[in-house]
Length: 137
Image 1 (cartoon, rainbow, N blue to C red):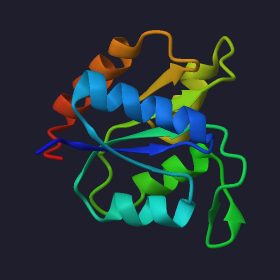
Image 2 (image 1 turned 60 degrees about the horizontal axis):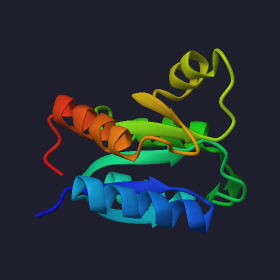
Image 3 (image 1 turned 90 degrees about the vertical axis):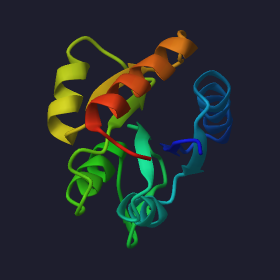
Image 4 (image 1 turned 120 degrees about the vertical axis):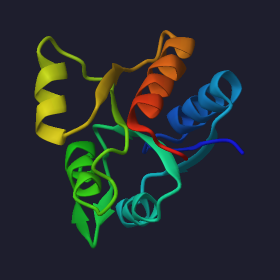
């Protein structure tokens, strides 16, 4: 059974691209959502091997309040059983020094700039974090 990766992305074209990369190059099952409440339910439900989280979520809400990927990552981290769930941030707005700031402020495991130039590299990075976490998927 394929490990499941949750892709939190508000751009439908990017979500499809990431899903294609993960399924084709990594053999992962993919669930995509930009609904904050659904994302938290999916994360709390166990069964996820990892999360790929867009930093700039335009219209994502949790119980009616707007959240970005940083806040949503923090909320996932606070859920029981999610302290070690691999979360990798994705952002198109990469600037020098952003990596450390984003990782520290969110509690995410890693960071990848968009557009994703190295597709196999993304899959390999994800695999390393899943293996390190001991996730059973």
